Image 1 (cartoon, helix red, strand yellow):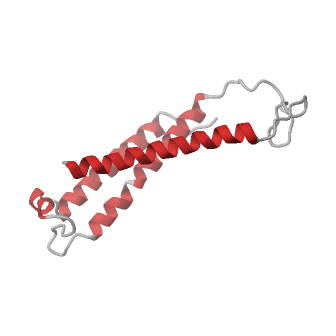
Image 2 (tube, rainbow, N blue to C red; image 1 turned 90 degrees about the vertical axis):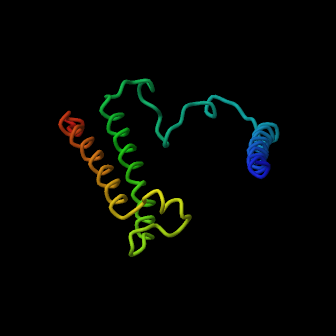
Image 3 (cartoon, rainbow, N blue to C red; image 1 turned 180 degrees about the horizontal axis):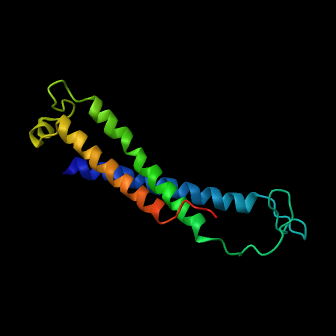
Length: 140
């Protein structure tokens, strides 16, 4: 119990140090840095072009829906990598041999790993088909 508490205290100290250093850097850059103001310096500037129109114009919700779907599928695809690493480490007997006997006793076998990925892929496919039928991917 004591070792676990000290591990977390080290992380807490590290977070406090990083937060303090970031604050010190921000205060120092504000205090030391130049502060020139003027009409040209304070004007809005974006990619070398003067802005045209209001910055608060409305966008179609489709842009946000597509962005959210991209993030959803992108993050879910990231789960394939650790699954592949674990699946590769399965032995010829079908039992997982890397960490402890408790995993073997829990029944982590080749069919279990394949079944979990089949279910995961099926859920992804159902979500993709649902979004497709709702017309999320049509831009016109």
